[in-house]
Length: 325
Image 1: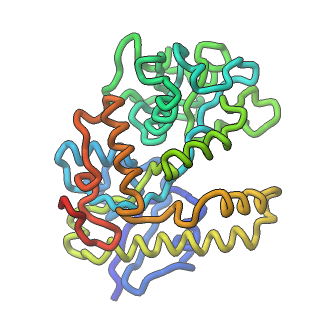
Image 2: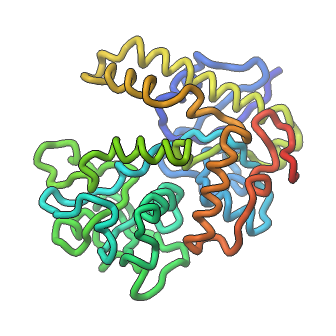
């Protein structure tokens, strides 16, 4: 008799086989709750046993000594960040280095994606102290919430003026650039008025990958500690199902690529320009990326001390303990 696993996930395309049941398990009856906003703390959730979890917020739990969430190094959201910095089409800014001394908007100060984007800027000589930062909602459709997370500093890191949408501030010239994980509505229309800061962000991402050897991970899978204690095999079972769902979906995308013009070209480029296993799950495959992220959180003042990958992930995707656990 399979046990029920209540799992909260965003609508990532490669989770479709898992959600539809094309990928399934005789040991797990997975009830997927499709969420737009991540569960803030799955350890305190009465509705979920596991959830897609922010990498940065998970590290905060670990350094706070909160072990109610067991994170596993299966990074279900990854992405290069060079494409995620936008400006106006008439802006003279075309490099990250030119953002020194400028006004930059972020959708959340300690968000994992924004942490990685600041890391990319820091590689070009623009650190936290080299720009003026504003945290706020991207568009009018997004809620007004505290996006500083306690990291505000007058004159350096502040809330967006009047809580106004950052795309409006950018249009008005009150911001010079915005970090955004998702492009705002209308961005893909010809008259949007916005563009990526980097004219050839793809080349920059290639250089970045050549230097670091990974595609940054933003979200991972977190389990309730009690659920794992009762069913320790569930870590490996769910991780394998997620990986299989990704494989099945990639096969379908390649078969049905004609649904989006030029998608076949993109799939061919990804296959030829990234090494096999670039998105592999597991502690060993991701240890350098985990260490670099922890280092960035510390350098950027989000974590008070440097944490080791073993501290962050006491369990691997097969359920075994890492060396420091």
